[in-house]
Image 1 (cartoon, rainbow, N blue to C red):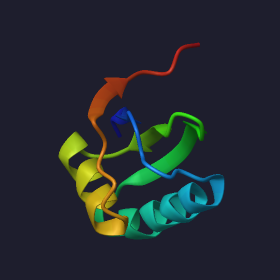
Image 2 (tube, rainbow, N blue to C red):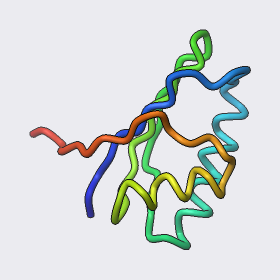
Image 3 (cartoon, one colour):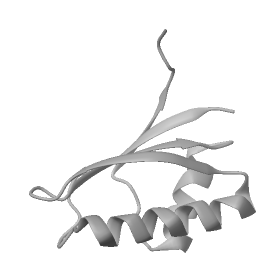
Image 4 (cartoon, rainbow, N blue to C red):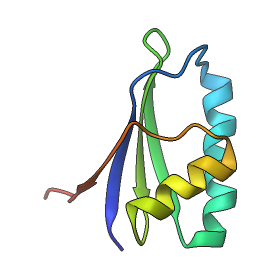
Length: 83
């Protein structure tokens, strides 16, 4: 399954609790599309968020974000894990 890193450059009012809830919704909605949101990283001060996602396509990863909470990424790039 292809792996992607998506970037949200600024989510206004970002909090750790709200992001945890959004990630949980991604996990739930992702099951419908064979998309698995694996992990995320964030900076509350800047509102920046990175999500690691396994998905058949970047479009399906975006669809899950859109349906789960509406916070679509500014950029989605394919990545490979290093050894």
